[in-house]
Amino acid sequence: MNILLLGSGGREHALAWKMAASPLVDRLFCAPGNAGIAREAACIDLDIADYGAVIAFCRGHGIDFVVVGPEAPLCAGIVDDLEAAGIKAFGPSAAAARLEGSKGFTKDLCRTNSIPTAVYERFSDAGRAKAYARARGAPIVVKADGLAAGKGVVVAASLAEAEAAIDMILGGGLGQAGAELVVEEFLDGEEASFFALCDGTNAVPLASAQDHKRAFDGDKGPNTGGMGAYSPAPIVDAVMSARVMSEIVLPTLRAMTAMGAPYKGVLYAGLMIGAEGPKLIEYNVRFGDPECQVLMPRLMSDLVPALLASRDGVLKSLDLRWYAEPALTVVMAARGYPGAYGKGSVISGLDKAAAVEGVEVFHAGTKAEDGRILANGGRVLNVSATGSTVREARTRAYEAISRIDWPEGFYRRDIGCRAVEREASVRSRLE
Image (cartoon, rainbow, N blue to C red; front, side, top):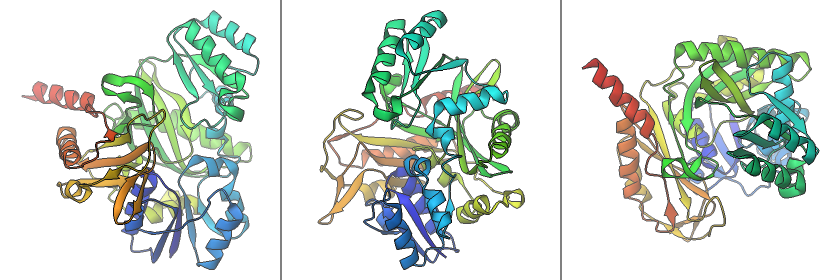
């Protein structure tokens, strides 16, 4: 079959790498892609926001299945348009994608269906939002309702910080995404990312992961789209996975079906796991980035039949197998990210890095020009590795990074440190 993948980031490179290995795939296209994806698929210069052009390409190239990577086109309804044109697509409808497109919608769904989450209220008036924040006290969390490219959440350590965030969001600092906001309680515990494939009725849990959001070592600096991740998340054992499915994921599927918007696609639950068990921080309606870059190397099964089963409503018969070995990825970003950064710097040594055992280098913001690989974004590379332990995967990833020559880039040097410490603690108890 012929497949079109939409997107250009590290997540899409990981998906392309996995799908290209499927015997079901005759031709794999990606729009617009990047320099790394070009090794796995034919990259097409196509504006994925122009749904008419996407549909025309599919018809002109015999595309049997479209896999949508990023959230913006999903929330805007690209799957609806593709399906209406008779083209199979992986991902939720626009109505179902509200689970990511509107934080207020998701919070209300949780409240109505007794899904555990932080106490909250929704506001479009700054004065009322500030009064609620003062009544709750700090620390407190302020979130823009809509899609804000990772910039719409402020964990305020003080009321002054919370009030500044409220003014910024409702004052137009995030455009239409901030027309409304959510103010919610700060949750204590350990964060984890949980993924499930859904077909509207059934759900199959995937592997868990933990990511590192802050830009610098020691969880310092501004929030980013993610500077690294590892899988599995130690806190999500079999018992916790079952709780997440029964208390959060499955009630969500039932609620979405009841409101006439059955959810199909991958559901990414950002969790806080504390003394009371798992609570939902937020939903995303696509694979995480950089979490996808550690999930795909651990997936033993063919990805393509799983994506098709999700779209076709037959997940009940699907059985996925995973490698037991953990995986870890380190993001290499352009200096200045997540603020202003330059483009066009030359990256070399990628083949030497990929020669390290267990390593795959997934491209995010790159482009090829005159035989060279150039930085073309904020997060530029994902150096992923597997190993018998997190420590071994981490060692391999950083060994690969040491072979990459890119003076204009930076990366965190402590990705996976908590998991390594936990491994050491478990090992010492067993000895």
